[in-house]
Image (cartoon, rainbow, N blue to C red; front, side, top):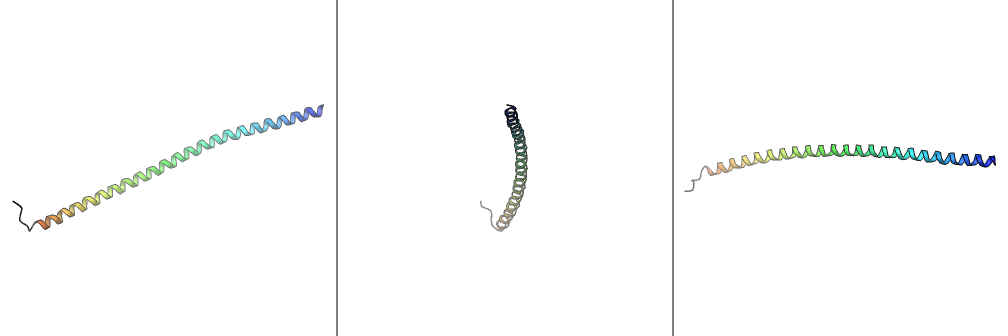
Amino acid sequence: MTKTIWTGLLASTLVLGSISAMAQTAGQDIKDAGHETKQAAKDTGHGIKKGTKTGYHKTKNGTKKAYHKTGSGIAKVGDKMEGKPKPQ
């Protein structure tokens, strides 16, 4: 009888110990998932910031280039028009 009591106690201790270990692991897994989600959001934000800056600078440079090209094109047309009589 004593042997079965000790066997029962040992079995219940092992079961409770493994349940406790699984609960701690699950809790840590949830914390890890939260940290990974936070880091992913930060990485996404950094990527968007960089892309936005790059787009801004490319647009700014393209606008300047178009402005200068337009100015030089108008000057060329003006030079061509100088020698011709004005329409009446």
